[in-house]
Length: 205
Image (cartoon, rainbow, N blue to C red; front, side, top):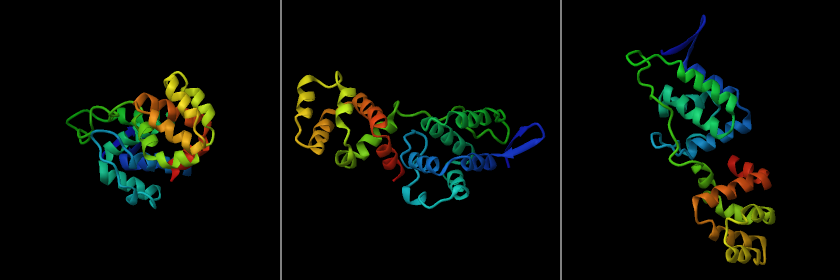
């Protein structure tokens, strides 16, 4: 089996992957699964939700290795950890990836570079689109969100949103105004700031 050498220690790719998964909290593990289900990298296919829901860390490591191959599983994990802002752990994964032997060795099947997102922040946009119904029903702090978006939405549309009779009505009108990727990104950033518990709950379920 392929391995990296660190002094007198030799660690297989499979052991590295499982070791990193074991460092995640339960909440972070759920977020990792969410990102695997909603993966947006060109080269790698998503893993269906039904295949991930009940997996523990050992089974998840096996599933990722079977789905992507050992080296690419680490590449995917590296990108997701960056997305989750687990930068210290992502840096360690990246260091292990960079220790791979050169072409011609038994590790020559590893890609030359990590997978790249199709567009920046596409996972954020996907969240906004996928959870439209839940966000319309459950967002309550609409005023501070509108304050954050003020200047990005035209005056007429902004006033129309404010004029909504209920929070659900105002959220529906807001969604009609979220007609660009940039607006959805800004909306998601504001959601994380003003409704963090709601965002986390939707990400976990």
